[in-house]
Length: 244
Image: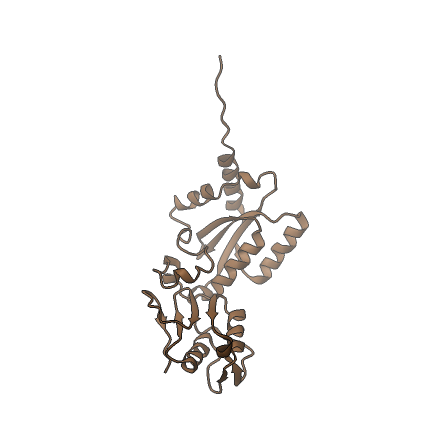
């Protein structure tokens, strides 16, 4: 008598991961707690892991990362810059993966488990991707971006009453927790801005720059990011910031 034995390793590993995740208490996704995670990673000399994000006690996103800390830092940065979300407490659970089992932990199976419970609505909604790239500016926004658009009132520190456009754009790009993309000739970047009385927010500074540059330039606001180019391209989705 003989038979064929098939051991479905990814299913077995993922099932155990889920069981252990369910036993963990979700902790707030904050910089302080991620510092604790960083210390835990160093202690165990491991970086890869799986994680689940929770909003109002419901799993909203599950994933796997080669560097767990780096991925969660990216998620925290994105969440901080979104209207509504920044006012809520997003929590997370995470498990480091021993290198012997890292390749066996299947992300799709993990996501499927939560999807079957009607959770993880942020998966496949546009939450994960970073900068969509210039060629995709103006495309139909993702579900996540529609629900949680960027906070255009984000404060920008270190802006004086007189600065060049390049200096202000650099401040914005460095401080905004979402994509701020621009491409201008050097002569435009060196143009002086008078900013007395201008709100030191992303929108306030963007409007001041748009006014200074004039109609040949487009400072565009999208649900997920902002861009500035010397262009007359038409966008199906997005708002051109007024130059007057």
